[in-house]
Image (tube, rainbow, N blue to C red; front, side, top):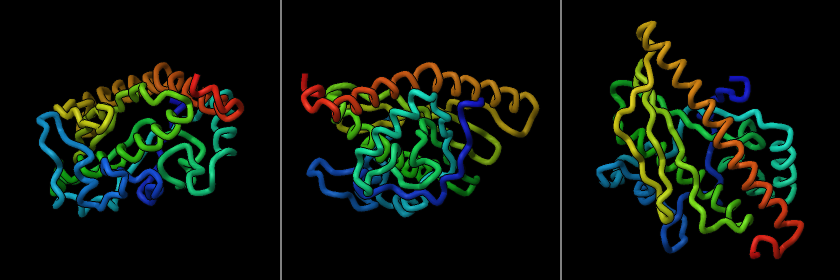
Length: 229
């Protein structure tokens, strides 16, 4: 997958402007932010789980954008103030000018799925805030974000969940969709095929969608009334 690169983002931190917010628009505490995501049963993630919030997630699949998209990203960032001068929700340099559409959280057997969901949920909620800010500039406030695949790794087993935009919040669709493992040749081949499918989704679905969105956002700065037409 030449258009994607694995990036270690354990040192990345969310920019304050994109921390998940309460309906009152106040910045959340770690405990309150843990409610930004929930699983398919509708059960909220508990405040006790929020102790892991500051660890965030481990890896990201980062795009090598087309020349057209890279030009749009550069133009967009030139118009951003320093505190939000990143195309993602973090100023971590490897993610500042290249978009990351897929995130990966790893955990050991001793780690709980709830904690992993909290970390992924808050990270993706911050990603959603960043995307919403771009959508507002593009005049696309009424549009929904793409459903985002996120990967969890438990020892050798890899599974995918889906973060769905419900307008006012996101929801984790988590039904243990196993996409492979590293304990057997069959599992490795399954994982390779799954990652290729996710890579194709990035190239064929996400990149065109994001290019269109960013085009509208950049054009709206050149024509302040464009986003309202």
